[in-house]
Length: 127
Image 1 (cartoon, rainbow, N blue to C red):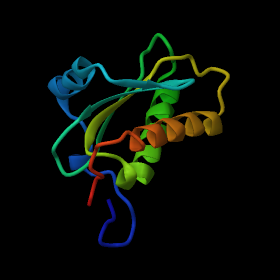
Image 2 (image 1 turned 90 degrees about the horizontal axis):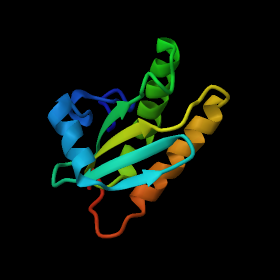
Image 3 (image 1 turned 30 degrees about the vertical axis):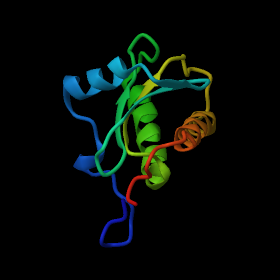
Image 4 (image 1 turned 90 degrees about the vertical axis):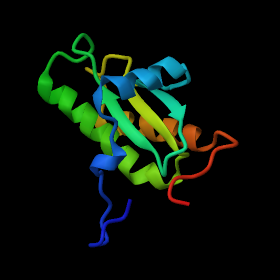
């Protein structure tokens, strides 16, 4: 989503809100797995992709690290949203990240988003 000032944003309409929206994505049972993240997704008829992020305390004890992992996921999604199909996506951390670097987390999520964009038979967001 490109803002009026030329920047990209992660607006309210691009996010999943509430337990019901997350549950509907998990219930659809479609998932792409990477080294650190799992991308759960559910195709929609809405105008674009929306994101939710979950990070379990059992995988990342420190709150500042959990927040970092979520921030990285939102940033990768924000940059790749235009190329994604119209779907609801939940990025879920499924492996400990104690020894991981930011570049590894970014690479894992970019790879998963690319795989999601390559799924045939879906319309692209914003077009």
